[in-house]
Length: 235
Image (spheres, rainbow, N blue to C red):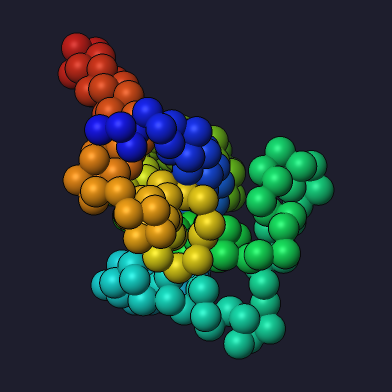
């Protein structure tokens, strides 16, 4: 187990790279998933069809294929995901501004894939809202978007906190694929570096990697359990 103490700085750096990927991808997935959920329940048929097609295709596509397309397909299409180099954000997350784009590709891949599951979680929450709530909004003259923003989504959000948290936990674990597609310095790539290049045993290295992911997922899981118990008590 000396590998854990001798390379603590390497594990810490890998942890923070993975943490940054997860934070940015979670924000992107929540935003895109909300838009997709609005499309899925929209009264405009083409929007519903487009949202349904997105969810059906992405949710049934292996994440490895999504990563592969983003890492190798986007450059073929002439994109390096430069749209993620947002002013100030690229100062906070320095890797967004580097010339090695795989960090950005990983964020896009996780966002695109996870958004489909976020959409379905939100849609289930919307369906749990009493129809009379939205009907009352329409009777007051609210448009579809106003009804959605002011009445439906706030109530649906309460019902979807736990499912959305589970989706984010799954996304954190899925981020392990990033290292296999060229993201330098994340937890998974760190394990490959220590076992292949430096000759450390695989078991202690992967124990360290697993500990890093547990640090990210266990507190979130405990928080979701607490929220779920509070909701049960309030009901």
